[in-house]
Length: 247
View 1 (tube, one colour):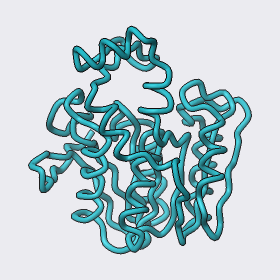
View 2 (spheres, rainbow, N blue to C red):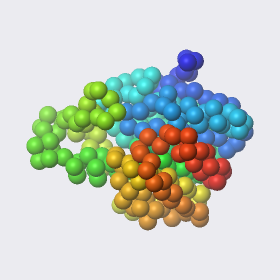
View 3 (tube, rainbow, N blue to C red):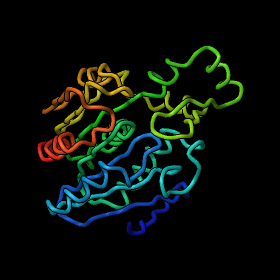
C-alpha cells in the first residue's frame, strides 16, 4: 500500500488522499461514516478509473483513516468542509461525485453549494439526514438524556468491535445540514443505487431522495438482496455503469 499524500485544509486539518491523474470529468469518491479510503468500493473504483483513463480522487475525512484529528470530535459540517477543501485543491473542473452512505449526504451538500463543480451524482445507499432520522429518532429516552447531559452516547457497530461514539455535537450539527426537508434542484444527471437487504439505510430513504431531487435525468436502481456494503462484483459493476451514465 503506497503512502498517501496530505492536504492541509483552511481549518488546519490534515487529510490523507490518493489522486490519479486522467481525463475529465474526474471522479471523487466520498466515503461513509467511520469508513476510510482503503475500502473495497474506493480501491476498486480507483483501479477501474485508471483503466478508463479517468482522473480519480479518494481521501479520508478528518477523524477517519489516516487523516488527522479524532473521530468523536468531528461532525457532518466538518466532513463536508473537508470534502469541499479536497474538491477545491485536488481537482479541476466539474467532477462526478460518488457518495457511499454518509458520503451520499456529503455529495448532496457539495452539489448544492458548488453546482459548477459537479458533472454528475452517484449515491450508493445514500444516507442523508441519518443523524436525525435514524440516530436521534431511534434513540431511547435514556439514550437521549445521556446524550444531552454527558454529551455523548455509545451505540454498537455491526462493522467494528468497538462501538460508535455519538456526540451531542454530531446530532446538533447534523440538524444544521439537513437536506431532505426541501427540494434539491440539480442540473446534472443523478443515479441512486440501493440494496433491498440494506439493514443500515432503509429503502424509504432512497424513495424520499427520489421524491426530493429535481434533476433532468434521475434514476433509482433497487438491487434485490444487496446489503449496505454494496461491494460484490455485481454491485461494483452497477456503480461503474452509473458513473458512465452520468458523465
